[in-house]
Image (cartoon, rainbow, N blue to C red):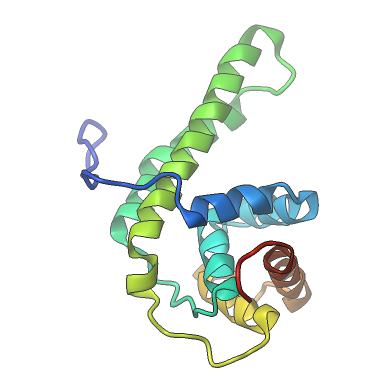
Amino acid sequence: MTQTDSLTLPALMEPDNPLWRYALACWQKPDLAETCLMLQAQGWSVTRILCAGWLGVNGRTFTGIEDAKVTEWREHVTGRIRAARKSIPRDHGPTHEFRSALAKAELQAEQTELALAWQTLYERNPDVASMHNCTTVIVQNLLSAAPLTTRETQPMTQITKLASLLAEHSQRSTEPC
């Protein structure tokens, strides 16, 4: 895809879906948001983390395989907006309004990314987890979500902590675990 080509997106998408609502609820937990952002800085995709968590709290395993449209959107839209926002100093007064607009656009791009993921999440992850412990399922899902370059080097304590935080959300909500 060249810089001037448009992405081919589905005509119908559901931006306000259960995965998006799960993501919003998770983001209200400062420890969880901080851990996700720390992993993002190490090359992880927060969308993949949230998909792994959501599938886990719903008793599904995550294969780690996602639709090409999700990956393409992340690379060509969400990632570029994030990079633009991060290149502007946080405390630079004259560009504060522009940086805020980019942050809002980044959130909308993430919502679209999750809407694209939502469309094929169950289809690409049909297996029901054989494990009954929610945290264990989420740990396995996170290992599938991890970038290939960090799968072996990622400390299990960090992954287990993240899985516990994602599982805690399900125990406080109406979602099964």
